[in-house]
Image (cartoon, rainbow, N blue to C red):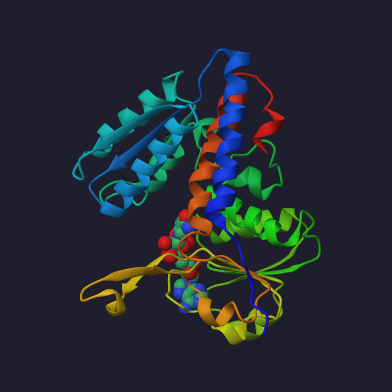
Length: 303
Ligand code: NAD
């Protein structure tokens, strides 16, 4: 039995980050400006706090000006609005990332729509969603996790994905829907499955690329996978790991990795697959945003 190639998301993300760092240096030389990223965290969700810290750390590593704003969980919506408006007007800030989810008393859509589209490095503003949907990828800011998923698929299959069958499981605005748009832009035949989909197994069996973005541990079984397919597991689920000791936990994806790797041609692990790509692409988006705002071409070394 042959085993799937394990796609090393960490290594590919590191390479992307190095490219962004080089391109950021070229951008600085050309424009005299420094790309700036502001991250906004509301509340003390430990997972969100870790993500935001990592984003700030990597931003500094690539030579960006990095600002981190932390607000208490009970902050008023008006105060958050005022902060976004201030960051929108700050010429040293090229990218604004508001870590989701926001507390229930804050209107998440209102906050996302308040961010200037050209500073929306998460790619969640309706203008960027619309540009992606219209195929205007060169003008949009593209959501980071889906963009990372396409890069990882290409690392296994080469640049040309044209005509391949892609099954995306999950239809969220953050992952599933934008991933579908991106694979469509790569001329794939895209199917989106979700919680109401009938007979997902049959759909999965015809997928050359399977993207799982659900948030249900080990939902995708090994025998669903088409032999030789490329499997991109976006899911991040914390589950008990009694084998590591009492009360210990571990991260797993949405795919039964051990079973799937005996069938797939290539597969991303969790952790170490899609996760690291998200931060790398955030840096890429910030550089792109800085270039556009300064009327400078994105250095070729950035891609
Ligand atoms: P979400 O909860 O917003 O969306 C989940 C989607 O799965 C929904 O569209 C729903 O219809 C679908 N779904 C639910 N149950 C299903 C079922 N039984 N069969 C088929 N589809 C079903 O989640 P999200 O924000 O899209 O995140 C999905 C997963 O990806 C989570 O585990 C999340 O932690 C992970 N994630 C990872 C990264 C990363 O950087 N690697 C980034 C974002 C999200």
